[in-house]
Structures are given as C-alpha cells and as structure tokens.
Length: 215
Image (cartoon, rainbow, N blue to C red; front, side, top):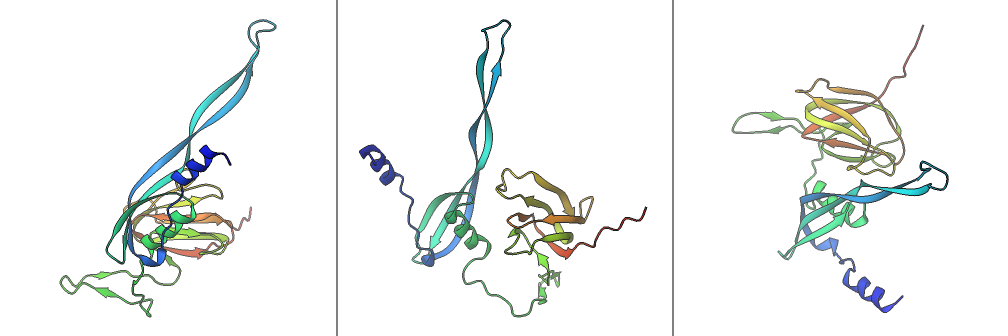
C-alpha cells in the first residue's frame, strides 16, 4: 500500500464503538444515496464509418445513510453515521427497536389500562407483528402468508434479496382501519427476503390456505 493510500485509510478509519456502553439510540436523519450507472451502446451513424460507441450515465438509488444520536451510560453523546445494511447500522438499529433495560412482561396477553381515561390499548399476542423489519428465515419461516391489520394503519412492504428498504420493488397498499383493505393475501416470503411493517399498527400473520381451482 502506498503512502497516500495509507494516509487515507487512517483518516477515514471507521470509528470503534463500545456497544456495551450504549444507553440509548435515536435515528435523527435518513439520507438516500445514489450512484452513477452507465449504459453502453453503439450508434451506426448515417454512413459507413460514422459509427461510434456511446455511454449514457444515469443516477440510481444505492442504499441510504442513517444518522444516529447515541447516548452512552456515562452521559456523553455522539452523532454517528452508518450506511444501511452494514453491521454498524444494524447494531444501532437494534438499540432503536429493542432498547436495553426494556422490561418484558411474562404475560403475552397483558392488557394496559389508562387509569385516567379508562381506555384499553392493544398489546401483542401470538403471531402478531408491530412496526419493524422482519427477516425471512430468521424472524419468520419461509412460506406463503396472509397479513391482516388488527389495529392501526401501515404500509406492508416486502424487501427482496439484495434490495434495501430504499430501492425495493415489492410494495403493498396501505392496510388498516382507515384504508381500502385490511388484508394482504398469499404473500410469498422466501429465505433472505424481509417484511417491513411501516406505520403505527399491529398485523396478524397466518399461513395462507392453498388456492383451489375447480373449473
């Protein structure tokens, strides 16, 4: 490695983070990143010998960059940037979705009551998904599923293998109490894909029934 390359690697060296000392993490900004893609072709021209190669650049999505506000146990804070789908970004997002020290009830059907207004709010039951991103093959077994919104409204998004939540091509309509539909049927979920519940809602997931055709 040359001297210039060595200096660049020292300047832009990724910051080490002691994740055991993190108290809380908050996402304060998400920026869409783009890259230049080149399409090559050939123009024949009007007469023999006028042909030439052509190159047409275009900007295409290339993931995103998250900006986190990280609070450590000693009271100090840092602003940390991380590219989506990197180990650093995934670890920090884990703190956002599942903060340390969060109490977990031993009763899955516990009902939370607002003592002042006497209103009852839904809590998670079996096979129910709140806002978040779920990996097929890790969080959800591969298969074909029906998703039913039982509370709130959200977008149900399927992120294909090799895609990010910025450039995925499989979007489903907004589902929920105030939307045109409450159910997405026969959603094929393959190993490595992701399901994203984007919004304040709870979805119930169940295995789809086989399609029967009797003509």
